[in-house]
Image (cartoon, rainbow, N blue to C red):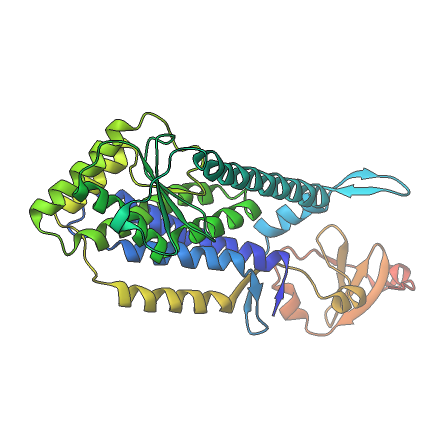
Length: 378
């Protein structure tokens, strides 16, 4: 079990397949009659785990590429700077850019975390009131005039922030219940985990598409759990609460990658509304999906993509015969192999060798052949 360039590329390949599958499922979500948000989340989670553990095992079967990977390997090995005391290849430059991108993304996350912590600080200077019967230890629920939309912040000590707007008791109950489901599922921690993986694979374009899908999946799952026990009238009032918050909020959540808001953009709200009203949510296929994904993750460990190469021992003890470098001199009984006018060896199986495509056979007189023979050291 080890990590290598080949194992990283293999993990990226199999994780990207799952991301593409998830995107294809989302393209059909509006036309689907039933939706299981847990299936979407399982696919996203397995793709992230594949990226987190880019390892290969000794039993993995190597799929050797003779064209694509060798082509890129030649590019990676190309020396940009070749001095006496300093050598810089394309591969080393790529690793350097990768590392700098990782550091840049980690610093961005740290800055966002500090800004989120400051939110609690300036809210602490306001007139803060607890939400009465809705206070759930150890979750702190704060109502403040400094925010415009309900939001969940903090993964170690989650805090639910609610804007100081006119809300009915039922509306407030929907908002808090919604955010508490996020807390119970550790969705904030999942988003932090996702951003950490994205910081490492910042160059992987499907990850940015997956980020948007993860945000939608988390909201779809909460809607599914919250509304499955509600009556049709209660579902309507829940949707009205979503729309009310969206209408009253004029600011975007600039920390959305590390927080969870109650409302969403127009397109996402339309999808969530339709799914709740039409009662599309279901729990079918969850178990089947788990089995399929476990089998997929297990079988993917049996394959690793590698660059085709010749064994060093073979390469050092043999001569690569090409049409430009070799000549066969023949008589009626045998084939003599000559390379660069140097005699190498004799093949007795003349008929078999003569069937090789590209063979250049020249008939020579015995005297001419003797003149061509000369010692050749490999």
